Length: 117
Length: 115
Image 1 (cartoon, each protein chain N blue to C red):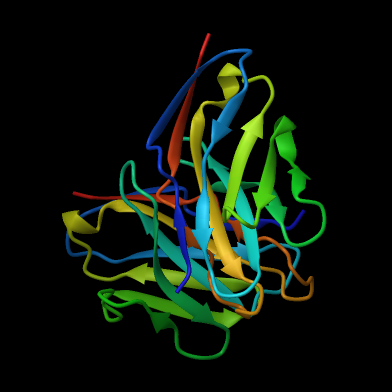
Image 2 (cartoon, rainbow over the protein chains, first blue to last red):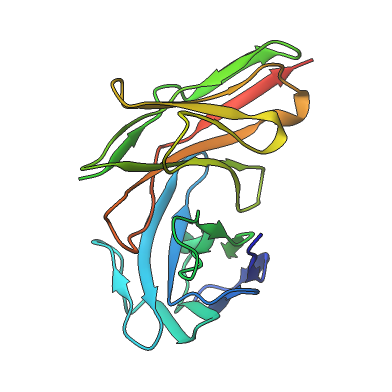
């Protein structure tokens, strides 16, 4: 099946620094990827929809200047958490679908556990 | 608007017993329905989906789900639970005509299988 690779799986950073998370579709093209955030024992909260070659669409309440999304190619989207603070600590997950295959499920990356100290 | 309800935060079942994790949905038009499982500190793994056809869908690891249009439900089932099935389970929906929109997830149900 299709594979989505997310890197890094775990990162610890100091408050005020920026962290970049990569999401790659390994064997299919994804013009659209989705970024989610998950708090402990809670469901996935959609943060933004990443569109290849254009600006991302952010959900209400998500700061676009804090969570920078770049989707420069059909197989790579990046999420950069800028000037991270402890409240940004969370589990971030990306998702993509193979648009060449109709009615397919979404595939998810392994997730990134971000801890800001 | 699309929505998914998973009424149980936690389901406990003894190993070897059948398990059911409930899910109901609301969507305009025909639904595409999905079940995913999440283990600690991992992404979501796809279990099964209903797109069209037979209402009983069989998926990975012996799981199955039954689409019931009149009750707008898509409950996840397994005839005999294993301790290794203990995880967080998410039901998700997307409208058939919703294009490339993201899935809408339920809040998740934590399954605990006790030996």
